[in-house]
Amino acid sequence: MDTVKCSVCGKEMDFKNARECEICGKTVCLDCLGYFAVYKRSVYRDYENLVPVCPNCKPKAMLSKKLLKIVDEVFREEKEVK
Image: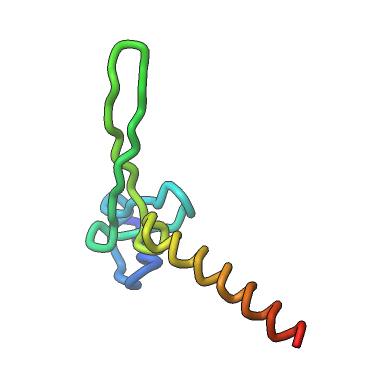
């Protein structure tokens, strides 16, 4: 059996128990895996699709990273101006 390592916790697992993050493509174990819903509209009906993601790519975590980056850029510019 092929074994792979979880990119989040480092746990070794069989290849069949590993999942891949849809956003970044990292290998994640079932314990660390999270999902978020994406609403899709088709011709006949609307439905919800669950997307597997790692903890770093969850929408709340991604928003926090972007906000921290923006705050760092703003405060860095103010320090350079003075």
